[in-house]
Length: 115
Length: 115
Image (cartoon, rainbow over all chains, first blue to last red; front, side, top):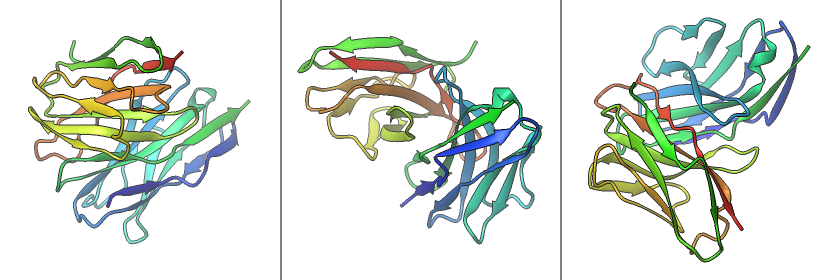
C-alpha cells in the first residue's frame, strides 16, 4: 500500500538560510510520481515540484529542489535562501501509475521562517 | 479560465443533518479526489474517482458518500453517520491519462462546522 511519511511536524529557520524538509515513501509500484505542495494559512494548495521514479536527475524549480534517493525511498525538499513568505505547511504526496490513481499525502511539516 | 471550484466556502450544519459539498472542474480531468484536513494535520483521502460512474473509498470513507454522474462534478455528502465532521474539506482533480508528471489542482476548500 502507498504510504508517505513526513517526520518533522515543525521546522524553524532563519531567513536566507537553506532548509530541508524530509519525506519518505513506501510503494511496490516501480512507476510513481512524487509531489510537493505548499499550503499557506489561507488553505490553498500550491504545487511546487515534481519528481518521477524514472527521472535520472533531481528536479529543480527556482529556489526549490528535490533530493531524490530512490534506494532509500526518500524525496526531500530543499528550499534555498528562505524568505518570510515561505512560512507555511508543506506536504509531500505520491501517485502510483498502476491501480486506481490514488494520490496520497503525508502529515505535513509546518515551516516557520524567522527574520 | 480553467479551474476547480468548491462551494460553499463556509458551511454550518446541525448535528444529525446530512450536508453536500460541491466540487466542479472545467479542466477535463478524469480523476477527482476528496480530502479531509483537521487543524495542523495532513490531508486524508476520503473518496476518489478515475472515471464517470465509478469511485473508490479512500482511507476514511465511513460517514461520507459521493457520486460521479458527470465528468465535471464530484459532490461529497457528509452524512449524520460521520461522528466528527467539523474539518476543512479539499477537492482536487488530476489528468491521469498515462502521465505521471501532471500535478493535482485543488479547489479553495470548504470549512464545515457542526453546531
